[in-house]
Image 1: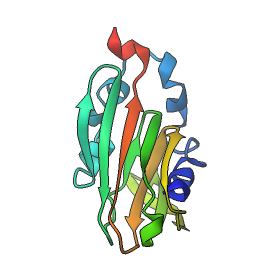
Image 2: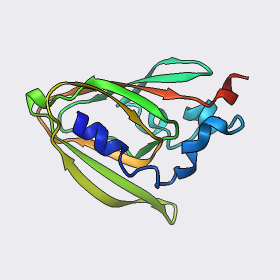
Image 3: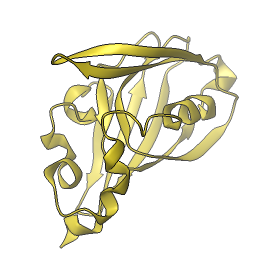
Length: 156
């Protein structure tokens, strides 16, 4: 999963939500304070893979499940996050990370990379992510937790 998590994090700040990286100093905004209010938020756009375990005005904790051969719908993560979980590498996990841009009101694929994670449990930082999807192309289910960090202005 480290490979997936590192690939997921790398190069995505430049996507649709590049400005969200500075969200910690922004005034309250629904996309940051109530992320699911945005139609392409992970929980709204990919509810079969993303489930809210806890949410308050400071953080939102997501459980992310990817069964074998599952492909998430295109979605975003508007907030910076800490991601934790077992990579699935010991059991042969493999992923395709697919990036998109919005063009003429539709998502258009711009890149696809295959990731084979090394075995173990990882905890990594991730900046906000623009439109993407992950396909589990390996034989093992993968589960991890993503703690999204809301700007301080959401708690005022």
